[in-house]
Length: 255
Image (spheres, rainbow, N blue to C red):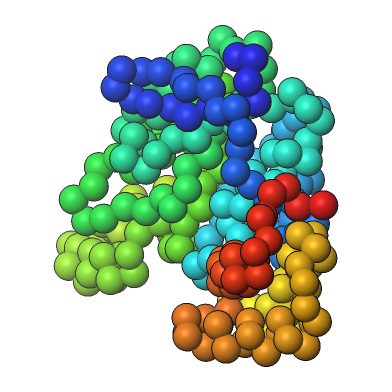
């Protein structure tokens, strides 16, 4: 495992090295002070061989959940942790992946972006088992992070429906709710206000040395967010991409 990042393919079972991870620098993720602190401290403890918790980052779309995971990985000492991405559709192969990683010489952070489960989905049982309840348990050299728009990884109406129709109220839903309980660290993300959104615009503009005045960029960014019906980190970088393109600026690595 010479690379710092990999993508897991379930069929055939393969770890594919990633030569360049698409990510945003940690200091460009604004409005997330306590989220950054919690996840960075947890990840650094893991990198140093100390106890650390599996984590689920949940909440508002576009507010930097997956970006934070990748940025925190980059902020750890080089080579300390291998970042391994597993697709939502491959969660059923997670026990197989952990079998591969159990004997790995490095510590591994397994990451699933946009994780959620639907009514007929049984893959949650594989995740539940390897996180806590399996006979082998989670390998000591592996940590699992997931992002989701749902706090409990299940749709609210499914949980409520199973509570209502169970012989004993709540009994059927309890199994599904217990999945999120196996994540020791829950980190919530919420939509940002306009000052935070404009601070994101200023930070990106400075990092990429964009032309124009702050007042000009702010006016255009507010109009852009209005067309999207939201303010978020994702909307901010989409505006910056459009602004840079209109002004003939190539967006390379942030300075």
